Image 1 (cartoon, rainbow, N blue to C red):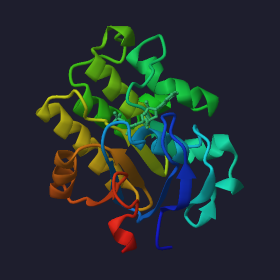
Image 2 (cartoon, rainbow, N blue to C red):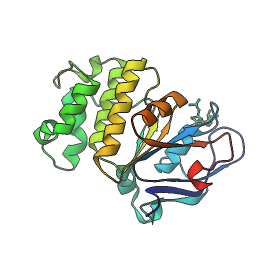
Image 3 (cartoon, protein in one colour):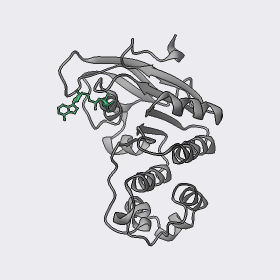
Image 4 (tube, rainbow, N blue to C red):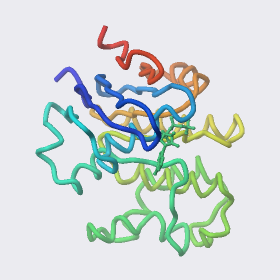
Length: 226
Ligand SMILES: Nc1ncnc2c1ncn2[C@@H]1O[C@H](COP(=O)(O)OP(=O)(O)OP(=O)(O)O)[C@@H](O)[C@H]1O
């Protein structure tokens, strides 16, 4: 299989005025596709379209060669997981926020939090924070990192990240990128599509990730499709 996820002539309309945008791109497993383009061009809308939170006009998305039409919306969003710019936390503790998605799958809370990966991610991204802390007392950046840990624990095949390092200082941003690079390397068939700036791309390359750019201000093709 050449691509983990492939956008084939995916056409969508943003909420703003302007013509529909059509993109084609393929993401090999283990790599990161950066979405670039000027403010308001439709980067967030593209991520929301890929996750089926925003309707498309035409075209298709393939995951491991299988069209998105063959998945229920629920299955698709679990496998192709959208992480918004302002993620929502549940009321309750840090622990509750990490375990709530798993109560649906009837996995015990202790299993989730005793998982090595959960412990490692908490130590990396929220050092010094207790699982018993009320999540509403976390800072904006900490809340976002807690939500990111939750997204990583859900183990999607593809993570769609909307500016995950925005508003973070460089050191904390690097920790987030380390968590993402580690997550990519853990399993062979994972990928990330993210809206972010060139500095993140350069750092991920330094960490050994293979990256590409899909420029929405440009012709709408990934470099892998040349
Ligand atoms: N619900 C909505 N109602 C009206 N307009 C909307 C809605 N959502 C998005 N838009 C508009 O659609 C356009 C694309 O928005 P989008 O958030 O996808 O842009 P973006 O490229 O991610 O921008 P930025 O880099 O500033 O975050 C913008 O002009 C935005 O104002």
